Image 1 (spheres, rainbow, N blue to C red):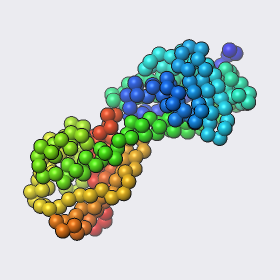
Image 2: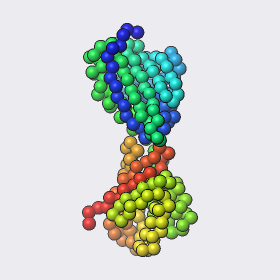
Image 3: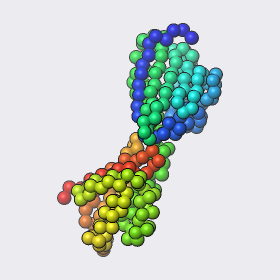
Image 4: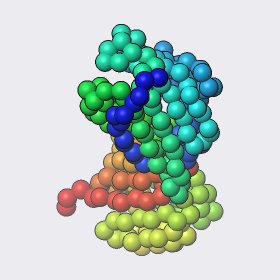
Length: 256
């Protein structure tokens, strides 16, 4: 390979473990979910890297190094030969653990400045797509998790409510709204018991689909009285943990 003196660097934090993130470099189905249908990767030294972008543009290269779950290195170029031919640039992706999250650090080395500059926005976009693809798989069960959250709010039986909270939340879950500043699942459980004591017959009901992006989920809700009459509503903003459960939530009511 010719010298590659020009490079771009980009890093992002993905709310998933390194093992979860790395499997997108070793599984062609997940690789294609990132790059586009038909894309493939052979995750062995010398194995082919193939990218078929949704607009039909094709790129390819070869794996140089793969060390799970730390690092993958591969050559990269375009089948058309422009702006650089296959094998004429080098992509290095490193993964660093940041608690339960992963810091992805990318370096793309080039022979010339022009193709490097042309790839700055491309990698900004592609890594955003990548983070969303990882998040969408990791939180594919978000509707059920949010369902368990609302079921816990409406559950009178203490044991059943605890089971719903165990399903929906991490032990250190935080919750904030106009009436609550809660730290921890046990305190949240006690708060829900108090709601039933002081507001008997009140229930919360989710309305519409759960929307999730990059590990943050939104869902609208309505508060119903004993006869099903509405007593207001709002939106919950959920931050999801790497294991798919809710680690914090903020309830934002509709204006009174």
